[in-house]
Image (cartoon, rainbow, N blue to C red):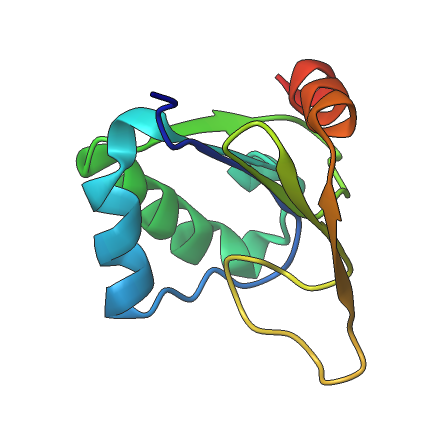
Length: 116
């Protein structure tokens, strides 16, 4: 039986979590990886908020990896389903942003391998 997994790569100015989203991440924490820019890549005025959000995730057992100058926004679920687009997956965005769903083990593996 396959274990569920979720890898999220994101970039953006805001990290806003709803309690349900945070609860989900905590429930599957051994299978979630979040890759984002380090706090020093954000504007000075945003760094405290970014650090606080990262600490919230880390303190709840979610693995957060930083990668400088990242711009990709996607999620890979169960090593086969990809959500890829301009929507900030961990915050909110504008209504004109888009995302598409792709089912591909090969593409999922390539995205996870390149980002990690």
